[in-house]
Length: 174
Image (cartoon, helix red, strand yellow):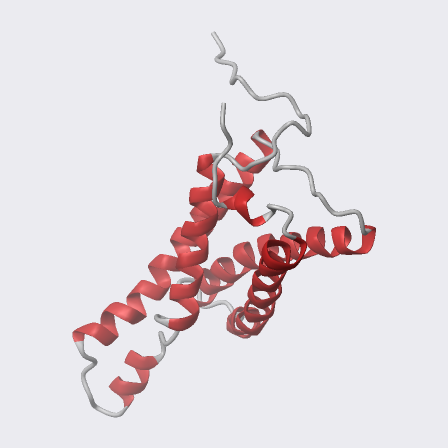
């Protein structure tokens, strides 16, 4: 006996993201910001050990959280991608084809980075693979993508006033 999922038909009827999509977006965003601004110093313990100093509990927590939060991001992005395949995102409301292409490209770049960063981190940390440089390269790329993404959201909200930002704040009804 097989169980069929009631998958919504692919149609542009969705004008908002689902609650699950919204929660995943903001949770992943918060975890990425944690990684970039709070816990991004996993080498601290190693440097302190080389100098003969014991890291504080806070330093040890922050270094360890970088690894675990990275794994959590990988899992959540995987869930978000599966959800995106199951329930399409709202159609773009962008008349300019170049801007629409740039939006699709930036979202694709986010997915690539949000998979590549944890995978290269895991490869370097747990497997000793020589991919630490690739992992580090992702950080400035994420800064640029986040800045462009935030600027685009604010542009939609305050210049175009087209309600685009509200689709990622207010879940779909019905």
